[in-house]
Amino acid sequence: MRKLLVLALVGLVAQLIDGSLGMAYGLTSSTLLLVAGVAPAAASASVHLAEIGTTLAAGVAHWRFGNVDWRVVTRIALPGAVGAFAGATVLSSISTEAAAPWMAGILFTLGAYLLIRFTRPLRTDRVGGRLRGRFLGPLGLVAGFVDATGGGGWGPVATPALLVSGRMEPRKVIGSVDTAEFVVAGAASIGFLIGLGTEGFLLPTVAALLIGGLIAAPLAAWLVRIVPAQLLGAAVGGVIVLTNARTLIRSAELDGPTRPALYALLAVGWLTALVLAVRALRRTRRARAEAASASPAVAAGAPGEAPDVAPAGEVPADLAATGTPAPR
Image (cartoon, rainbow, N blue to C red):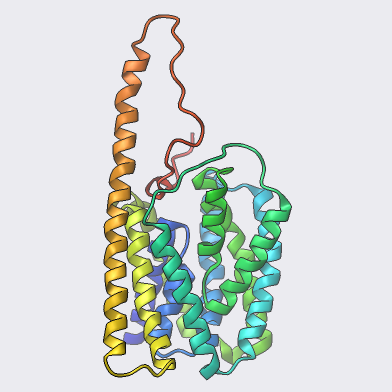
């Protein structure tokens, strides 16, 4: 019972993070399951089966609030399902000894990506236009494969790529990616079912993760208003890097002074990323405050004088403001 409560807490924390960032449910859950000693394939299989329920709930909520671009969903979900099925098949055929460093390496890389990505504000460079299928298809395929083989990665790969394109509102990026993940999680679960059989799924673990995730889903909307997503992303990225570095260092059989030196270096890098994230967040808030204070002055200008319009792409799309707005 104690283990199930811990796993439910893992699912709750992972969903809180995912609801605030639009990513990292699989990364957080898989990392913590690996630390708990669960085999890589079983960890990924269990997380993806639990995600069928959590992503369905998230997708319905995003649809009700108008945060879903169905054209984007269909063009990344189907290739993502193919990539996830292939990734699950590959991971199922690898031994636990070989899969552990492979999975830890993928999670470490994605954690480092999160760490770096959230040290600077995200800007929208191009507003309007449509994302082409030749971009969305390969993106979904790669994100789905990485997601299944790494136990997570759909959000960290797909969400930043769509945000950087600047052609979608942040809320629609997160809503579309979360909705498409339902199809990806289902395809990955089928792949694990074929490769591992029913014994590959740890059903008590799945139930605990699912319950924790469903409880956290409404709390995530409250959390995103309290904790800036930029700081949360840098913090989570550091945790993922450090925990998976432990597996990689053990696999490389590094002993002596090398091991503590590497941990110290990673800790310094994490602290530096947090400082940079705080500075980026302050710059973003300062720019917004200046823009807000300038608005009344523009409105009070001479009659008939056209107000200055900021060029498209100059407004930072800080991820702290990617929460779902109230419907109009």
